[in-house]
Amino acid sequence: MRIKYLFLLILSLFFINPVFSASEKKVIKVAISNKNGFEYTNVKMLSKTPISIISMSQSGSNAQIGVIEPEKIIEVKIKDTLYYIYVENDLKFEKLSEPLLFSSNSEIEILDLNKKGTPAKYKGMIEIRSSKNNATFNLINVVDMQNYLRGVVSNEMPVSFGLEALKAQAVAARNYATNANMNPNYDLVDSTAAQVYYGVNSYRDISDKAVSETMGIYALYKEKPIMAQYFSTSGGITDDWDDVFGNGTPSDTHPYLKARYDKEGQKPLVTEDDVKKFYSSMEGGIDTNSPKYRWSFEFTREELENILHTTLQQQSKAGLVSPSYDGDIKLEGLKEIKPIKRTQSGKITELEIVAKTGTYKIKKELGIRRVLKKNNAILPSANFFIETVGEEKNVNKEKETGLIALFSTFDDETYPKIFKFTGGGFGHGVGMSQFGAYNLAKAGKKYPEILKHYYTDIDISTHPLTVLYNEYNVWYKTDFYFDKNSYKNAYLYINNHKGTSEFPFKINDLEFNSTREISGNKVVKIDITQYLKNGINTVNFAPLTHENKGKYVIYRVEFN
Image 1 (cartoon, rainbow, N blue to C red):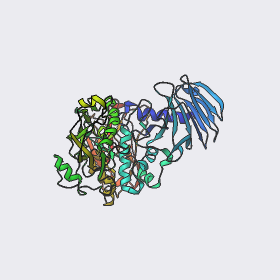
Image 2: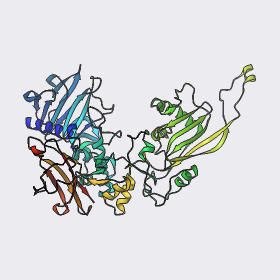
Image 3: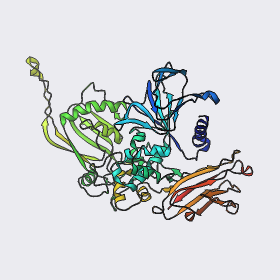
């Protein structure tokens, strides 16, 4: 067991430690949800092989708490910030400090927790860490990147979309996970707040194949993995990050997340007439087979007033409604819903609601979609135009009687009877359209072409790896899958701006030891296509010599 613990420790230091900031993240920590969120007071688990329990707050021989026999139910409870472990209802270990790690050579099943309708099972290890209030804990799956993606891809994209679309999804999901850092306890959650992850329950042959055949592959912009946003359906035009999510500061910009037009010659939707014409037509997109390519919803005025009474309060608490709506004076006499600001795709990012009882502005596309719910579901997108149908007099429905009625004034204004919303697309609209990826794949495009269609000026590459001096003579290793049907060439890029005099490396089993002749260049580009095979390939770099201590080189493999 000590060997396994040391192996995990090496992984955490080598791949997660910020000293190796240009290293590939190979281990992912995912918070597992239950029906109440991500907080637990107790959990039960078992495995077909022995489960080793490790206290990560201890070191050396004290780290290993014990080994539990196969098929024995382990229950962990928290009380007064300390942990108690029961085996088959008998207390085995008590007053343990967090974090605790549970490791098995086979899957670990979490009892009383279902994912996709069956008991939840996970590869890798289960970690328990106290949450902020110390009265509950987070249940975390510590898992390698490939098995994490196997638990994600089939949830984020239908497997019926085919291998090439699923490969594009696998790369996007790998990029997303690489950039994630949601909480001090974990990188990601398993819900739609990040990427939907159901562990072993999500493994499917074709999505597993997509993950394995993109192993080690990333989308890079200026040699850094992009934040690969994706969503269901564009409706014909995607949007700039800056317009949808940006806060206007130079640091909050993503040049690779730019508006993309499916139809050649398409112009931005500038006017309300542009928006109405575009979203009234089925033309202009490559994801037309999506059920949400075009859509419409109708509300009666009274229905919408009741919905807004609830949703405006909710989004006021999120800071997205101005002035804040507390519901003390119920919204009545809804007159108009008016777009104030739109993006290139016609997406509304600021909306005004005008009623007799007040005028409110809602910010952000998600805030707008959440305010305008239908059948308790948010609108598919904020790409829509509004029409009204019919008029009726507003009603001050509380009619008074007696002498007071003689002095009552009645509202003679007219208000719309029906509000109709017509739009297109599903999701936030930034990055890759999944239905678009599906249709590009059907048209014969390979996954690199799909990614480059949606992400501007990217390179398809392995993760850059920084090579340093280390006294343990540990080589640096990059594994990746090469498919000659997807690429024509592969190039090894070596960044040697620090003037390192020698950096021996290997491509598979072929050694390149005489590197002094190329070390004078700041950037070295070597065509290595001939040295690669279909399938998994490896590039290894030796640690720098003592002569080059304090310097570094960065390498990666780019595919074209």
